[in-house]
Image 1 (cartoon, one colour):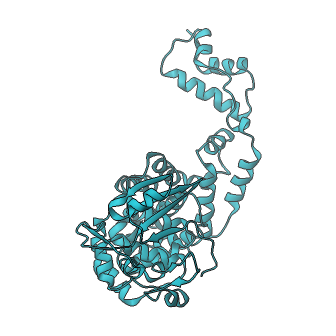
Image 2 (tube, one colour; image 1 turned 45 degrees about the vertical axis):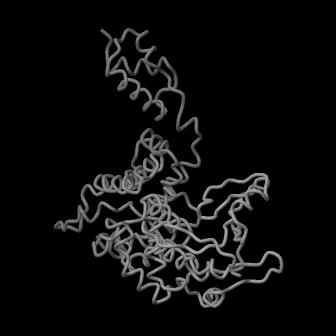
Image 3 (cartoon, rainbow, N blue to C red; image 1 turned 60 degrees about the vertical axis):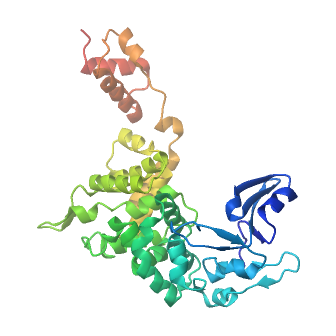
Length: 407
């Protein structure tokens, strides 16, 4: 109906789980208690669910009991939003709409099916999904649905942290992150799921560097330019890159300053990543983006060895992308970005990560005793190699001998 290509198709049927399991050769009863069976045909996996109605949701996520039914009308009345409550008859191609989904789709409205308080009480994550769908499709929240979200926002903590994290990540990577976070703020969900981000509001910045406004406005502008399907770590890095500013804000005689906001930001972002249970690798990349986002200010003044080591950062293309977003959301100058990108793209892998001219064994053979100074010696030789000052093993050893005469 929206002219988009679906990612997948789900099937709802009056057939009971045991019947579905018997009909197909490759099946997985992942949720047979709730009437859900996965059917595999080649490389395609289809979720097949038996029509049902749900009992109470005492855990705010799963129904305590389900009752299988024979009609699609009863089934859709337990679903979340009207636009998600439509079905298509696979035989005749007719759209079955018992909840006004077609009308809301054309009107651009996200409306909970039935009583929104009941729908959200059943599964608190539906509040975040309402925000995400509204942002993704540029729809409006139905007033009653929005009011129910505001009323129950404080209960979002009942949802598992992983599910909250995944829903926020979808908001950040579907191409409409700014709208999503504005809606999170308006509904009272933001202060519940990411209070650290809510604290960015009203934190002034020096106008000579940030004419766009406070830290919240600056962050929204970054989110506005996040492309759809961008890496999750980049999206979270953009959201959290200045998360340390509220805690370090001070008005100095010359201008507003945020001394140490990067270090504080790394700590706060680390706490967020742990709270939302990010995988270690993703956490490391998010923190690396925050830790290094201010270093671009010095790229023109960096020694060649320092610049090349900078380029060795894992996924350096994400660091470049964040710097570009940061610039466009503030002063607008891309001079440093263009310089760094041009050098990064010009240098070969061998120039950035050349094979070391000397090793610890070379130092021992030269008469040095192993110790902590070995790492300093090798680093000095590598810096000189990156600068182009030395190009051979003999030259590297001579340089070390000048600084550490052998006994």
